[in-house]
Length: 95
Image (cartoon, rainbow, N blue to C red; front, side, top):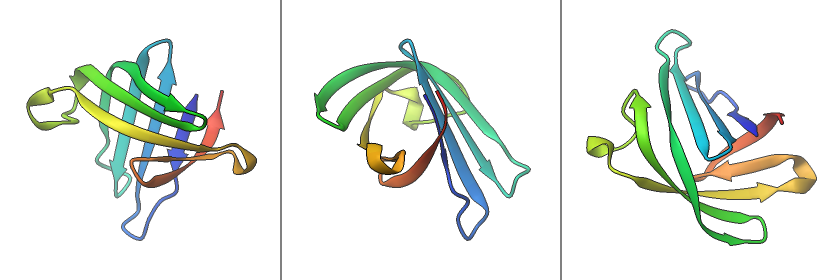
């Protein structure tokens, strides 16, 4: 699944991808300073359309302090084909 946030007032966007236990995270600031991280994830909790994932084994740009595992919360809104990932609204852009 590929999810992309809308650009905000500072022209910043994020893109997350999750597939087969692997994730990608891309962050662009001013469309000229991309940060790119890959790693693994595992599902810690799920309750309907609410998921808590643990991210670990990072490569690329730093995503957490000292690259320690971290958790993120994902809330799916199937009716609008959107999700909130750690309180940022994302739209689905691919399978």
